Image (cartoon, rainbow, N blue to C red; front, side, top):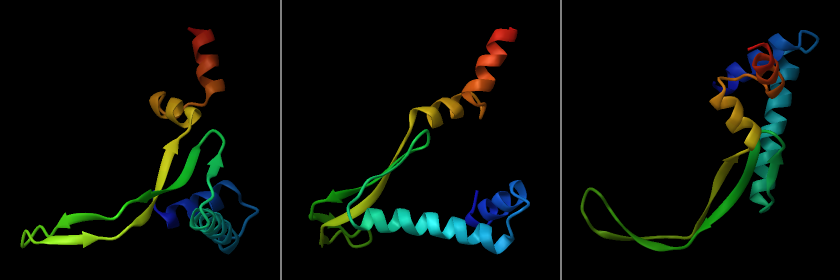
Length: 107
């Protein structure tokens, strides 16, 4: 799903929101996550997962074209760890825990 598809889906599911309001919501959420990671904070969305920034030490790399050794500086990279509920929903094909429990009772 692309950013524009997410905005369209949010607007479709919430008819009281204008398209520009849905776009502002999505942009604000992404911007706040980005700012928090930039500050070194952890962003946890219960049931979904956690975003963190991991540090990489400087190292020597190789230019794949020439084979020449190149110094690669230290950097920070975003990292995402899926939450338990997200992993379970993916493995159940998108059903919620409540829907899965009801299906089990019927069987």
